[in-house]
Amino acid sequence: MNNFNLISAVYDHLARLVFGNTLINSQTQYYGELKNGDKVLIVGGGTGHVLNKLDALRKPLIVNYLDKSEKMITMSKKRGPFQNIKVNYILGELDRLGNVHHDVVLAAFFLDVFTEENLAKVIRRLNQLLKPAGSLIVTDFVNTPKIWHKVLIGLMYIFFRLTTRLEGKRLLDFDFYLKGEGFVKDRCQPFFDGMIESAIYHKQSEMNYLPSGADL
Image 1 (cartoon, one colour):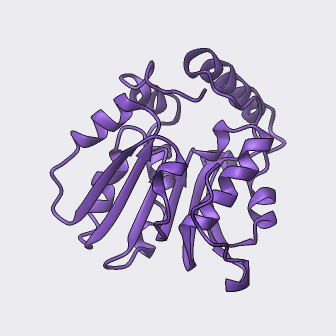
Image 2 (spheres, helix red, strand yellow; image 1 turned 90 degrees about the vertical axis):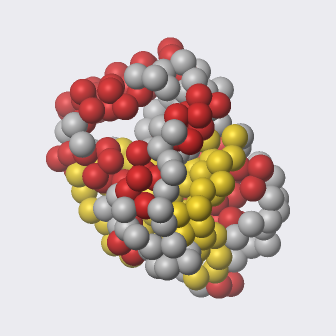
């Protein structure tokens, strides 16, 4: 399930065809929040455009770059070498990360691939991988009442279910699940007429921090 190997070579072209530069602009909206020396986790990193954006910040960062697609990892490695960031490429799922805690977790167009049952587990695991004072930056599609948004999102789910065996069947309310795990939305920025949102979340309090190491 959720394997993007088949469309890795055309993924960026398809994204630009439909959304122009909106996807990359939205997911990098809050990159300026990162600080020197931050340990950053990127989940579902795709073809690696974001690595060049992080390197352009000219801040020393340690990046764990996780993707389930071997071809996406291969394409991402070709983005280097980098001048300011050190990247550890990890092929697989969240359980490959063990007990490592991060200052920032970047989840761009990642949560939308999961079913309701698995989404709750994934968010819990992201919580465990984040330091108590860390930031979770989520960029993804959101449900709106606009008909053309609903049609476009529905078509995307059909396409990705056919080409990637996507497990998710519909767009869920990620904010609801994040709040259930103790995250608070600090601020957000809409894109593409409100169909896409980038938001920064923090844990409500350190009391919500769970010991890491639990696998999905």
